[in-house]
Image (cartoon, rainbow, N blue to C red; front, side):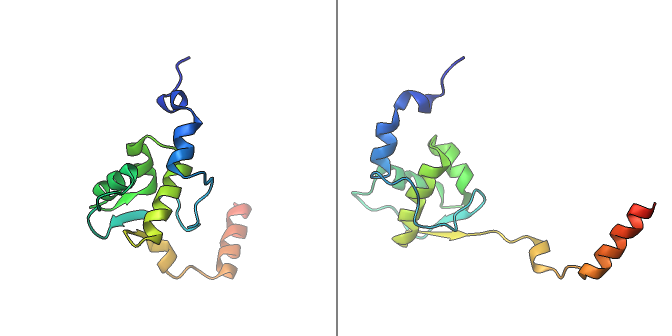
Length: 119
């Protein structure tokens, strides 16, 4: 069994990247949240932040960013929450057509369910 690249790095690097934090401040970030850069990276920024900003010139999902960086999703969310808090990136949660559409009345759905059970 081979160990993943991340396993060989040890926890020290991840601890350093997140400055010791184990969770992000922004709880609205999920795997499919789209991230878009608001500007260009500035000198002196953390290298991972620069990579994220360059990667997100076009919208990218949190899970895509995590995979590209080769970091766990939790660590990526912490890095992203730093950028969101600083106004360097914008996070947009995608909405589905169903969420915006009117759903049928619950009573109708119950009648359909009863009808299907009677078949």
